[in-house]
Amino acid sequence: MDDHNFFRWRQDVLNIFQSVTEADEITKILHQQTDQLEFDYFSLCIRHPVPFTRPKTSLRSSYPQSWLDHYHAANYFAIDPVLRPENFMRGNLPWNDALFGDTQEFWDAARDHGLRRGISQCVISPNRALGFLSVSRTANKGKILPDDELELRLQYLGELSLMTLTRLNDASMDAITLKLSKREREILQWTGEGKTSAEIAIILSISENTVNFHQKNMQKKFNAPNKTQIACYAAAIGII
Image 1: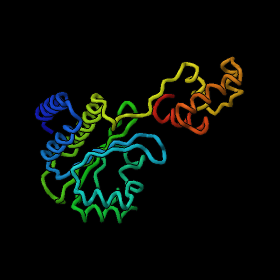
Image 2 (image 1 turned 60 degrees about the horizontal axis):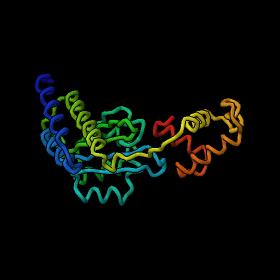
Image 3 (image 1 turned 30 degrees about the vertical axis):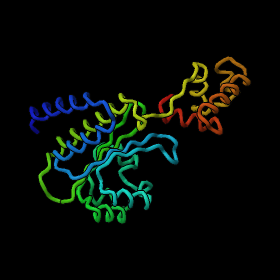
Image 4 (image 1 turned 90 degrees about the vertical axis):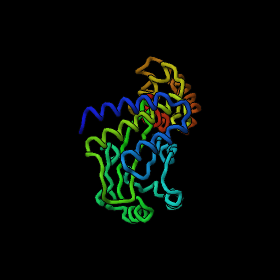
């Protein structure tokens, strides 16, 4: 890797993102940057940790519309190996037969739509949202940067994209935000430890009725049916 060229590129792309005033500009920037990396398509998928069963997601992409339509129609979101925790925690994911080993139909369909060689890079924002920046090309062969430099560039592009969307208060970065009192946070933390209302009352030297009162208030704030879901959501979004 040519360090001089990389650091010069990093400063240039930082300046570009810092000048962004509209969220839609990010799509254009990513298209330009990934094109310079000699990839035909890109996608930036942002996924929040909650709700657990149907997490909030958003997508910016230059993928063929036919592939996006097929992806949604076939519900590939449910089986996409890039989105599995055991995979995305690795950060950089080259697309290969091993990655798609148990989703062969999905892999075949992607290649049928021209997505024959690709890489996905996962980055995590401070509010626990996951950003998946994927790039792909129609040809299996061709000039590509060394793996280490390509990984660094994709990671930086992903991080800058999420940071810029956050700076612009874009809806895609909105997470569940709750204003909790100090007492509510204390009760949440002990609930997360599996303590009952009676046990929490003893620990905090308050009445059990007071504990239940705060838990009911938090259920309303979270729109949650019970205290277990409150604790799970709070842990997932980093409140506790």
